[in-house]
Length: 133
Image (cartoon, rainbow, N blue to C red):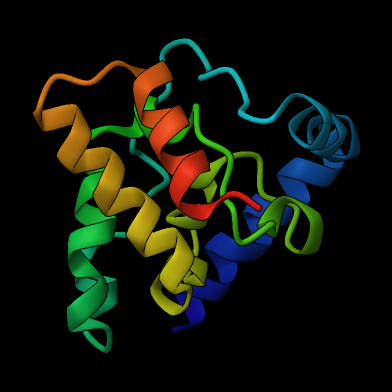
């Protein structure tokens, strides 16, 4: 648990320290963020740290498998506003994704559509239709 909190705080400090407010404004006005070139799943919470969350392991696994897709998706739980998250991928770089059904459902939808050959734009449209307001 201590490790998860450390990862979460490092992520929050990174966002604030490197223009988090600018990123948040961009996500809020343009919808989905552009995926960062070369993004990896290196910061996604390791499976071993999810022992208390057996039902959520699949969503974290999706984040590990397709980080470049999740990094290009806005998370409709609005965590960019209340937690400083950049994209849906950010939700799985902390414990947030384990406690948020919206994050989990978006990640699982994205993974399924990606496996079926959908493009990022098609996934964005489906996520917005399902979870957008």
